[in-house]
Image (cartoon, rainbow, N blue to C red; front, side, top):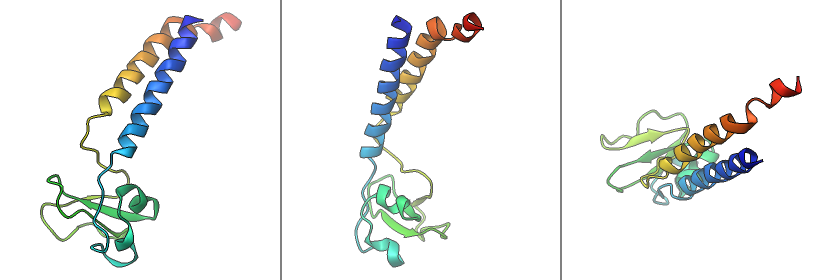
Length: 117
C-alpha cells in the first residue's frame, strides 16, 4: 500500500513539474511577428495555433512566425516549432518524480501481475 501511495505522490510531482515548466515559458512581443502569427504574445499560444516561436537566449525580441518558416531571419534567434523553451530549471522536478516513480513502482507494484497470474 505504501508503494501505491509513493506512485501517486511521484505522479503528482511529475504533473507539478510539467505545469511549472509550461507556466514559465518565455513571452513574445506582440505585433512583431509575421502574418497572422504576429498577434500571439506567448510561446504557448503561438505553438497552439500552428506557428513557430523565435526565441533569443538573452530575452530580446522573441516573436511568433508562420509554421512553415525554418529560420527567424536573425542569427541569434532559435526556431521552436514543437515545444517552448524554459530558462527556469524545472526539469529536475520532472526527473526526480520519474526516479521516485520507478523506485516506488519497482518496490511494490511491479510483481502484482505475476502474483495474480
